[in-house]
Length: 117
Image (cartoon, rainbow, N blue to C red; front, side, top):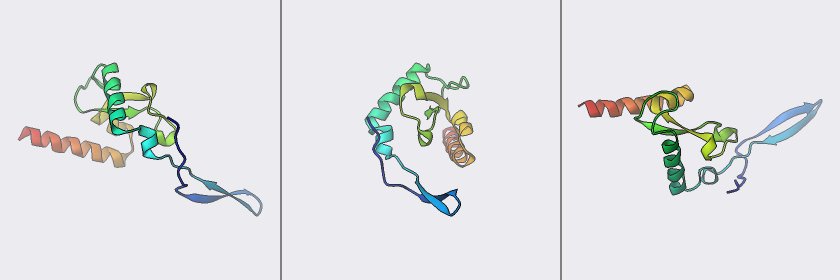
C-alpha cells in the first residue's frame, strides 16, 4: 500500500541565505494509509504478539500486551512485521513521552483498582 500525501499541517520559513527565505512544508500521512483498516491492523497485531511468544520483549510480563512501532510512524516507520514488537503497558509507557506515559499508567491502575474490588 502506497502512502498518499495530505495537505501540509504547518508551513514555516527557513532562512537559506542573506535576505532569502525558503518555505518548508511538513507533509502529513493520512492515518488510514499508515495503519490500514482496523481488521488489517488487528491481524498484524495478533501475528506480532504470537511471534513474540505472548509476552513483553523487554520483561517477562504477559498481561496488558500492546504492539509498539520500533521506528515511529512519525519518523517514517511503517506498519510491517519487522518494525513492530510486543510490549506490556508499563514498558510501552516508559518507551514514550511522559504525556503518553501518564495516560497509559493511570488507565492500568484504574483497571487494577476495579479488579481488586
